[in-house]
Length: 357
Image (cartoon, rainbow, N blue to C red; front, side, top):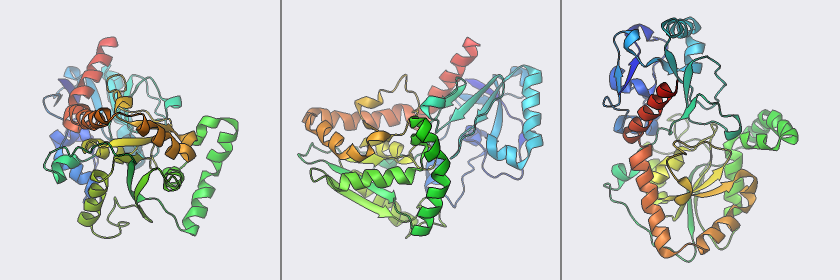
């Protein structure tokens, strides 16, 4: 068990949502305006079997910053500074939630930073990758029974989500993207940092033009994860999303604004094989989970060839292996990446870091 020091005096009244590690102790803080995130947060959390709160700082393994680092820094930089200073004076390692759509480098000595969306070429030694908050859709919508698909001759690819922009939004997006475009002229790998919707558009276009693939695409003009931008009802959108995944052989998974895909974890929860456009992503537990055994990886530079790559992969796959990949996808999610399972994994990783130090 990892002992965290995070007393009530660390609470920040200006912030509603504290870090998921504090859900077992301070309660679940997930906004009603983000219905799918809230559904996942309510369903599974980190466990008190793996984490506990220490009453005294000298008894703790880590001092925990109970909010997103960037959000607390913006809301109350004095409080953040006092927590950092208290950990330093006690000689304790600071545990920081550094997750966010835009993850800035955090340079604090003797700290461990939890991330969801690093780029592999800039990952820091003190960072630990955690899964995105994703609902177990198999339990929520399919009674927990894995629905196996047999290998077809012509593979189908499912996608339901935001994949279109108005001319005005597109112009603003391209303008904001200009620094990345220029950076990529001198350092090609920086091209992976472009906005996810642009990669989504390219991948969907390439797949739609491939006659050897059956496209199951529902493209929306707005983000459906927030009640202010969702088109249609929350329940209706969710059912359409789940039905699309269950009715497809592969699930197209492309990053959003952050360099990770919630759809990736949701697809795994249903036992669907991700068709994963890899934008130099770092996945959780890469030293344990053999992702390439049950996912199809396509480098972002090959987005326009994603159809050819999938067709070749599917052609060389035996019917038995196609079935096994679905089972392994579900198993990886349930045994390692769902928050109740990842709780054990994270505690073990943090324990190992303490041992090394």
